[in-house]
Image 1 (cartoon, rainbow, N blue to C red):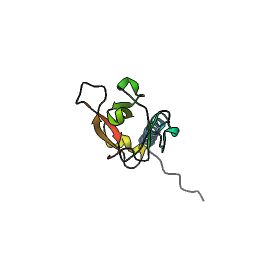
Image 2: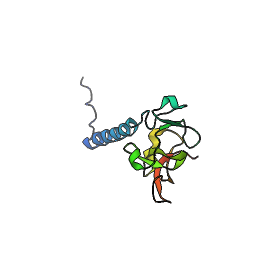
Image 3: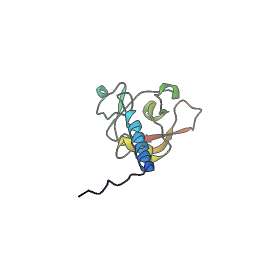
Image 4: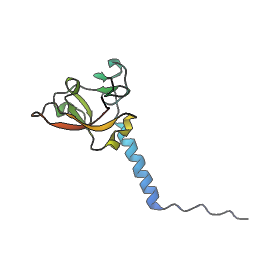
Length: 124
């Protein structure tokens, strides 16, 4: 007796799944001791460990005076005297950081005043 052939999977479904998996991998691959890793103290980061409600779970970052001081994909904020946070345009772009993170406007550092940047941050 012959078994039923396996169900056919649409090529579109395979391509869609592959794109979704790559997108998920690329976001979290940017987390490092320089920017984005969880931390409890400075020794776990290359430069600074940000803690408190605005940084759920702790957040490794680098100090900045302007955009050129930040790693690719991040923006210089006026928070904490100038720190880099991941840039974003919508909340889903911050999901890789975990619960409590969202895309929100924060004051820019090094601008002409009153400027804001969209970055991943907690409710702080």
